Image (tube, rainbow over all chains, first blue to last red):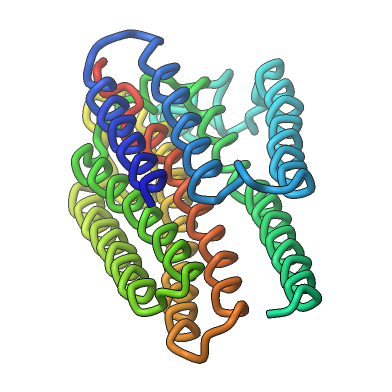
Length: 110
Length: 210
């Protein structure tokens, strides 16, 4: 019971840090801090509330394989998205300009 | 309980746990692409995504995160109590879980109402995010916002149903089955909580300070 309540307190402290930390202008560090705290919270929930800490190897493998597969999907499709230009159809205008105004202009010119 | 049936119980427990973890692994694949779409949009149109994120409700999002994290605590407490055989307090704890889950959905519903009134629903005439030069990209943010939070809300509703079911089973005759059910459904609840842990900074905190 004590462990569970301590975990909850840690989660609440992390929530306060991430929520109020995001109000401070730290530049790119804001996004990194938020992502790191989200990961820390997820680990706390998985370890202490979901008892992954005492889980047998088989269950840990199921959890880790899921994360590895997800990162593979992110890396492969991310590589695709980052290295290619979006090919717009004729009425959408040029480049990656997605503004409604440019779309409207392109439609009028078409 | 003799050792033979104790052994069978241990195997049954491990099976049920593994089954749920494999299901949750497939659920990650279900939610994952939503996060990929978000990361792509945030990378491609950072200003619009940050402006759109700033127009969400900071306080309601933060309160809802606290509500959800607390509900997870009560699920874990309920399981601990049920394992000890204190079934009545375990049911009380699940009452709190259901209540907190309902509060979460009510707050989210109120937020949707505000979004609707403030013209933040993508595809609707009059959509407008303040200080966003690129309104089309801001619409993409809100498309992801509604898709992700609605998908999450559906999972929450299912989770509340499961908690009520487990609560009912705990009221029945004592047995390993009802505790096992609670543990497995609890894993699902915690997973839905973890999804929100990542949705919260992505949708509510991005670009707050800029």
